[in-house]
Length: 340
Image 1 (cartoon, helix red, strand yellow):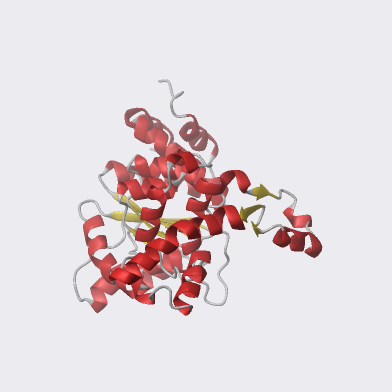
Image 2 (cartoon, one colour):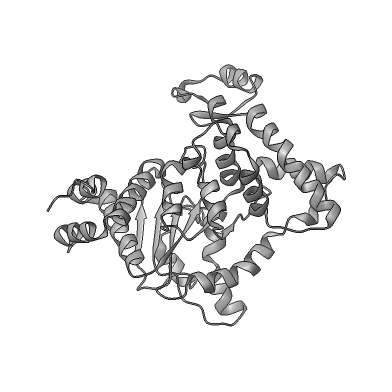
């Protein structure tokens, strides 16, 4: 049997035997088997994964039908847009660990906003997008329209003309999600650059705060979206990092059951990539077993925790899944040979 069409999957199955590598392998296999059964997968993305260019593999996965819904921070949704319109103006700092305070001050004065080892250009990203989205906000204010936060960004990214692209549009997960009309929640969207920009226009009276639907309305709408997504073989939960991006959507199951007092399927799979530790009641570092006590998962839910860097692990998992999607028979045969 030739496996040249499955190089990433073959590498993972051959080498990832123990520890976090084993968790990565098992999580990948369970993800693919869930999809094979007709299941769906929901992604929760925290951190600065869009600035780290996760879209290179996430966008193709969305187009391939391997991702069926998302919860993202306000920073991640806007930074996917920034990467598309201002990619050439980003500046990298591979030696960021050795920067002095004076050097970081110089980065500030150069109108760059550092995110670990890269930086977002103020004028080419923030201010360029502001010119597009603010008229949308003002128009919505005049008309009394109300929309979810992601709906504005879906409109903006599809309004950007192709000649204005600096990044590869095939690498923009937000563009892929907008075109697919992927269901998204953006909990805590106020905690983002454009959340701050929107607040400033509310403060000056140029925009109405009511044009953006609240986080409570996101959850009220998500009740129905979850019931749709969890039909059939159910929907799994693939989480990068912790915090509100993960905790907000995973709570939909107990809320439907206890607050609406309606039946709800449990999440059908759970995987978290995180390097957080459990301390002071940390959600980010909590083990999946804790979620059983909150009725978010059950003792029968396949659960995986990969204690590693998501910028390394997630692209590997996504690349292998894309291979599986392109050659399912070969993938299934190889998996059966290696892991049974």
